[in-house]
Image: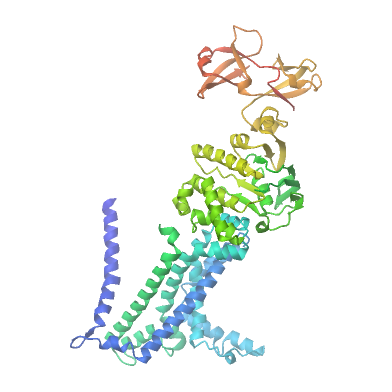
Length: 279
Length: 354
């Protein structure tokens, strides 16, 4: 039994080394490696307006979809788990979330173009009703359109990962709070949300990373017209505009840096929010 | 602490097609400790939840000091409740849990501090004030829950099987503490339990429930010695039920398995009436069959050592098993297989109509 455990553990670590540590090391060193040895040239290029813009867009998109997806996902998970909710709703939401959380890329872009595109079903129908969606400044092919599209998989992903935490909220806590004089709002303010906060933060970091690294969906939807870091990496690696693997590695290093900062912020917040769990 | 009286008037409650409470009426005096006792599914927790405001009755009303609160939401009732377990807020320390209701009421901070200090001392937990629930034992958690319920100076204290998740030793210790604290604070208390020993040991009065009905509401002594219902007679304590027929109501005699036995309780019944005779094990005296001529004759089946006493099972006519508690020191006089006679004092048996 121990031998089997040993083989499995070694296999796991070998996998981590081969597919996480070695590529990360390659990115790290590649970003500083020029034709004539070590250089800061590619990392310096990250501070050019074009790439700063891409980073800003990616962070805004990831933050917006993490926050909105987190809030809507939590509310949906809570409502479907409520004792008053019918069983079919719970089953339906769980099944749909499992599918929708993994529905991204070209099919998702196509689905949204068919619905919300300039000639999409819903857009045309709304126009027939006298409401032109695109007159409001909305465009499916803008950052706000990407937010809407990303929410299609971010909300279900949040439902899946927050459900165990929401299920862990005990009826006794709600009743004890109510018994001590708390209104439903006060229960959420002082009991429900503080207890859920560590799980909420962890889930939102996951959502942030999920949106920050998405490539296929924004590329298929905007044909690369909106500057996002993964699309810029794709551009410099594929050589459509120019081929510069080192710049791609520098951009990937920048992404790792942003994710590291997000993780650091999460760790600091988590230390405060979950202090009652760690002592 | 202000004490209030509780009045439950004609409460009915059904879930879907199942009737769980049937016309329950019960009145407590201010400062009284009342237990709702019954087997699982008898409706006692539903009744407590209706009093707390977590459920609405289909009909009937709940009054506190003659004020109808039937439709008041739970948060406006000012009742303290202790749940079975795991009700402490896990992200708050013991002191913060106790302070919770006071914060909602915007009690001045200095007053909050003194109430929390007093209650922690009352619960014997001053040294654990900064611990989180998962750092406390089950007994300590329930003490904090009790202190939290008392902090808001409730009109009524509701205890929903607060000892059921604890081990036997802590249970006994904590139930004595609950009684002490209740006596010191004088708060009217409604305690739900399925444990008759618990109910009988700490209550001023016990409400025995069965199948959604209140079958007897009386002092522990009367519930134990004078059950008015065959369910209570069978549920409370241990009894042997014997079928009999009144042979001489005037002189208190009943025929059991063809033997005339004393039973003062048959007075008032008509002669020849069929009755159930309930006899407690401690009320039965055993004699060796060859030493006396009166009593029910039987054969000793088994001994169970209970410490100071030994419970003896006696097969009477091979159709009824009678239980008798005798001093352990005398148990050797009635070995397994020996013939014995069981007798009792006229006042000992409880007579109920069939």
